Image 1 (cartoon, one colour):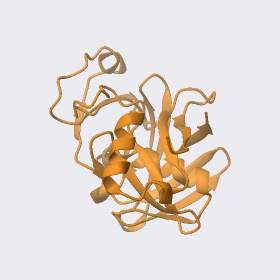
Image 2 (image 1 turned 120 degrees about the vertical axis):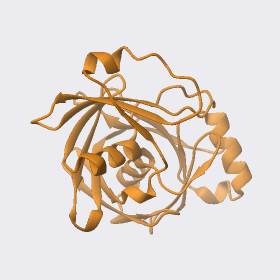
Image 3 (image 1 turned 135 degrees about the vertical axis):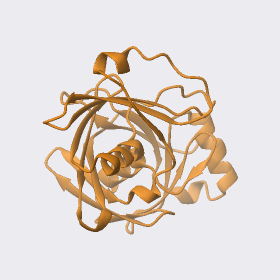
Length: 213
């Protein structure tokens, strides 16, 4: 099989957790879209990224079943790995920056695939949710500390592709930030951490820790 790296994106404060991401550093080894889709399905990560131009930051993103014009955790992971000022996705140019242990990207909510954002009464209610049946992408969330912008969340892709829960989801965090209109500190899944911050002219930054497995 083609060489690839595995990153964990949106790791917790102790460097644990995070959502796994497959990255094919040399996209020219898998030039055909059908072959890329097949490889993403075989790897089975929530997303796999193919790097088509590492110097310009041109990337191509796939779930096990579909190609995506933009996704949050693949962009944060690619930004950390490539260390370029921007990424070029099908949706548009994604600004990037490094700030200590955090890697940040800047994107527009309109680029994010649709998500159903469902507010619950407490973090315990979110924790106890059963896996919903396939059909829609559900982002379940509750305030942990409203004054501090702390959120507890879980993500359920609902694609019927073997991934019943997403450990950390940048696109959903982007949409929730746009809906609430404020910076957020999100704990998702088993303990992944996603930071967000609204920016001028409708842009939103998403930040997190990344590690190479």
